[in-house]
Length: 193
Length: 193
Image 1 (cartoon, one colour):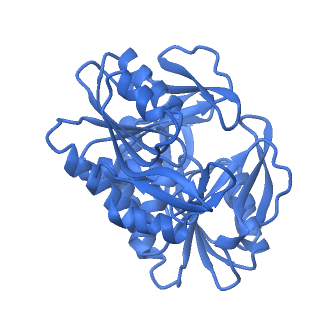
Image 2: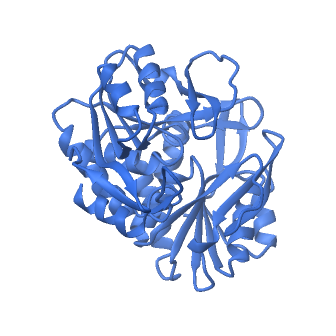
């Protein structure tokens, strides 16, 4: 997605070895116009996949996910993140390890919101090691629902999240794919859309 | 907001003494259509207030806030919640005590996103004790910006958040106001919009 790549080059900040900060339009301050176009781009691609729900994870995934849900005319569900959840009735959970923060958290969705007729599109802001997306896939499959695809705003292609998800049979569609960072600059590889 | 009240009566669940669960359209699964109408309602009311930013707090505030931002054609910022933040350069923070969870958390916004020419509309999903909104007001004022109003989706009018904020000179505008719960049913008082 050309417009997204241009915005990353213009407003993104490369920090250290492998961190890209996009807090001026995606992860802290949010540009609704860009989110709207991201949502429309995902929706157009998955138009004929019969999507019934869009699922994301709090918090930065919510804005791109709600506009994707709007463009597909379906509800959006955001999974909750918590340090430790004691098992509760009616809650589907997965453990997600964060390599960045080096902590395991429990991701959960109330089981009443997913059923075995659902065809789900996962949307998330970043794909790096793929642990969050893998947790969401796990939860959705526990509900007997089908994951139709995983829409990613920014993929760090030099980390192994995409490979992990594809090996598990998932379709990953990324709007911007970062091949590597070079002298504090982002170098893209060809995006999916 | 009639449509919101009807939705609360239809899909909300009263749990125990003073908990209203609206996880099927606001706090977990999200109805984009309702969020859009909420955003338009706030935007219409604050149309001539010269709003330059909409500020909310992760995670349930994000969906109503982004549609409010869209309708006002301004950026949205969501404040971050964390257990403990060591003071970092360029971060404005406030301590927020949650009566429900009985924990204090630190709410933060990067200072680069607010300045003394900003006129801010705060949007949040719930107002109960007003601690979260008070923290946001504090942060926005630290930046030298003006809080033009606080738009609340669901106010628990039997708790003292509104009084607290009004005493601090803030304008509170709530789309649904819960007077009390009666035999597991919601009883509304007249909403602001």
